[in-house]
Image 1 (spheres, rainbow, N blue to C red):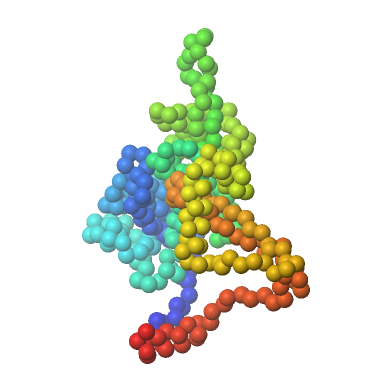
Image 2: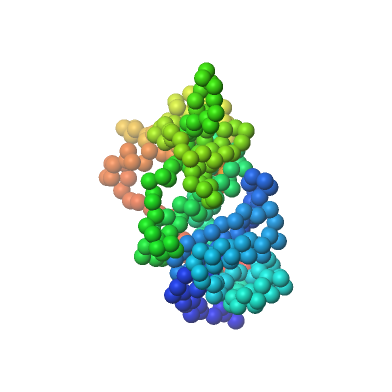
Length: 356
């Protein structure tokens, strides 16, 4: 039996709250502040405006949906018509089903094996996590700040253009064009004025910008022992870009690698690579032909990071400088190893027939 072809995408909603896409993501490898390790998203199909709520447990999904439903009803003066989700257990509970029926909300549960119908929340979650990885990798903040990063990414995505709608989600949701002038680079340092200080004490403290509070105009700042809200500050965005361009770059040459603070890790990665090539007989040492100058080689270095931005592996690769070769002098033909699927199937069939 073959898989039936997919007939197409579902119809788009023609008004705000006509269809809400929702999904629960988690558990995360790193807990956010206050033990949050899940998050649930709600995305309006018509405007692509999104909400995000952090959760400690998946069972909190129902309460977060109630919070979301009440907030959007008061803001828009409209009711949610339909809720689309996958078949996660949090959406299949009796309490959740009874609430939807009580409120007259049609539940759209996507069938198994139909990722085409899950496109909105699948893409939203992937975009959110990709942005969080990037943001965390450019700061030295503790990993539990991933929750603040998630909330900031949602705040930002609502205010930037989307391919799915003609205007920004914020403008379609509120009817007003978003003001972007107050937005700052997440994770940058900032000087924030003390509310009260003596004549001899510094008038400001150096903090890190970590987000936008939902309930008031201002910014979230972190100063090594607490997170607080302040109306404004002096943001060191240019300094942030220049410094991160120097902590985060990989060495370009062997000399830079052995002179860097991570020299031992780079040397270990190079030694491991050389041992691997020697064990697998990657090359055979021979005398070069008369009149032929061998092409050189160089090391390429790369830091492999985890989702939270921490460096997981120091990778060193030895590559030949093929660009130094000249057609007709060093080589005449170019070969590219491309496998055809029918060839692979034939080889597998032969191997199975002969019980190789």
